[in-house]
Image (cartoon, rainbow, N blue to C red; front, side, top):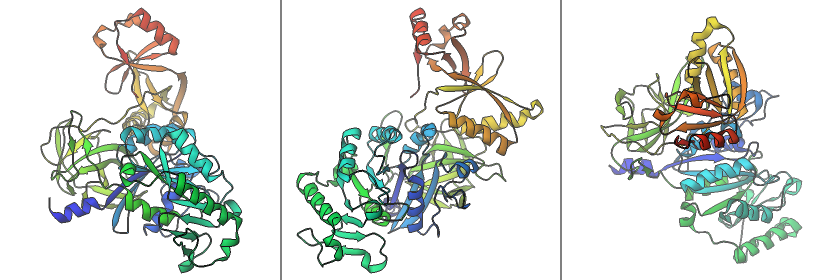
Length: 524
């Protein structure tokens, strides 16, 4: 591989921002894009009344509710690096989409609300990052409001998540008394509500300011100095190797809303975050980003990003080599080879044709129905698959039918496309072929109903059949219809596999006791 291409790959930084809803994740994404020069004006997610919406939220329902329900892919250049951010859904009902997105990144930025601390969704997403061993950088947000004591937050981080932490900076006051941050890493103080050259004050060898400043008389500054001395003596040491192994998280304090501490965070993050990493193959071994052959995998499919054109985009994480528009790519699962003439990169719903991309980048390929989530793509004759993406066992189920039978064509087309996006799962009853949808959370059904009406002109009737325990069957040939009943419904999934939907855990245990020879299994 030529040196210039190696340098291109080494300059990539691809990460996801993870958090509990409302911790400021999309606001942070906006500010990062602002620093990268990708947008001129960072809107906040909650700008519903002003009509000013976050740039990274593109779906109509996101603008109405002020939440992110899809993963946006955003790219910009900063400080000699090409940055790919994946802004994941914040709402817990969309954790399946988020989990798949985390398979496509090399590191994660975890955002924590300084008043609320670590919340349930943060814990779930953190565990996925730990499972993959990816580096995690922590940003404790909303210092412009009253929050919990910084030392208490650091302690909670280590106790609840079981990861060691190192404070890269430390807050001086908070809320109305928030004066700035003591930057341990860069040995300086960054003043809040101050612009220009006077924003930074140097720190001397003794840890105090090099030149006198009125701030030194403040009790908040003295408290910060004491805390920093305590961290220096009793806290963890900074160790870049441990950061890259996901054993130590660098912690930054700031406020995404007021744009304080974000640039310092971005500069430091890019210094320590990993460049593109190898990816494991399903049957062992791994593919290096510096391998000559182009390879990648599809982690997301999105229909109707442009409602005027009814398009479908397959999001590809490039694992190795170089992508060139017009090249032939092979999908070993089918196996088929296609010429890729339409490819794109994103800033929310803004996109531009991409002619060349390298390992670490995320690109969109226009899809006419050939791709599936989890597909491996190669630029040669490679006949292998990357390790599979996680799939979830749904917990909530609805029967769904078209309100207007005359529009059943729209109904079936819409369902097919939205199911292929992976947010909802599709089942059919054995003989009557009624459509049943499964999801991890209730909001997914609401989004499905909204999109069917607005994107496919198909109003639907949804009949809730409640929570079920879904189990797939290893030895399908041994299943008899006499095993079914009101508490054990037998259906087929979209791939034609048999699935039992049990009324509850008791019904599942009763079935296993009665039919011990039937081997059942669940997804994640």
